[in-house]
Image 1 (cartoon, rainbow, N blue to C red):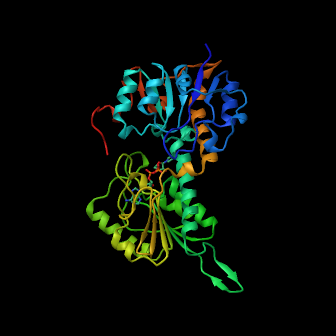
Image 2: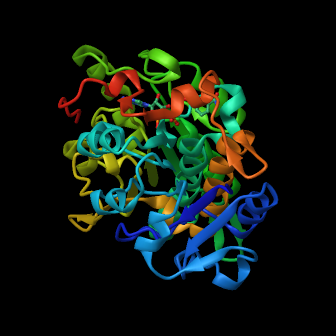
Image 3: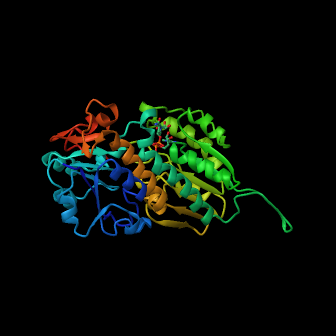
Length: 377
Ligand code: NAD
């Protein structure tokens, strides 16, 4: 029986990405997959139905889900969407497992095999499947563009007939995937860039992209290459050094995050009050509450007519064509090695599949989410 793959319209408000693009659709068809997509589902990402040559377009979402063996999605399924899926089907999507315990339970009841894109291991072999990275990179780029748009100054140094313009000072806080892309983008626009991260390993990475690394004397390398939470003393030490740099910046891009925890507070209201008039903060950590005390997730705050604090949500969705292309490719790279002659056979000894599986055959597979009922913040 031919594998039926379904790609529904994304129903979360503001979500413009889609888990399929015409190139990946063609590759799946070439593997013998029966690819189906909800009619018009890719319009928000600016792909027309006509571009999906060989894909069956289905109007009714119930019909689409009912017959699907495997579903590609961007946002975690809603309970209604999950209920439309046939029991035992496979879904590949972001799942936000730390806040979706009910969903996990229901997927167990329905014996859904869920591959959660947040759980793709960050190992060299899985880089081409790493949707956290592909999307974070887009956020880093777009965050700088937003900052440049809201800034009251030019980014590059300009020598003009009307005088010489000094380049903007951009500070990037948090130098993971998003932060490094933000540094690269701000440098391309000609700004003078400083960067800071609690993980000492990032110093060299920041410098190689042309940023000056701020050394606060605090290092907080945690498990698996992620940062750990700082002690109160470390926070104070970090703050004392950082505040001086914050006060001198024209644009600040913050991306600091700790997995499964609220975003660390790095810029207090007091420090914002000392920032330059006309300066801008783009808080890319606003999804987790924000790195700035004044950030309102999803809003733009005008602090006393002096500082603009922008807290955008779901930034990758604002670059929907490339975000969808990269995301669809990540999904394809994860699943396609297990499709042969139109059949899916996941290898449960494969390190990537084992780690990415959230639920399978009625069980929670990911160790850290086994503690049912215990919702993490
Ligand atoms: P993330 O989104 O979890 O966090 C963003 C950055 O914020 C991190 O660099 C973190 O160190 C930093 N941060 C946390 N608390 C901070 C604080 N108080 N002050 C300043 N900075 C703070 O990170 P990410 O982009 O997902 O990357 C996490 C790790 O995964 C990194 O080590 C990265 O190199 C690694 N990674 C590996 C691969 C791979 O090998 N395939 C791919 C992608 C990322």
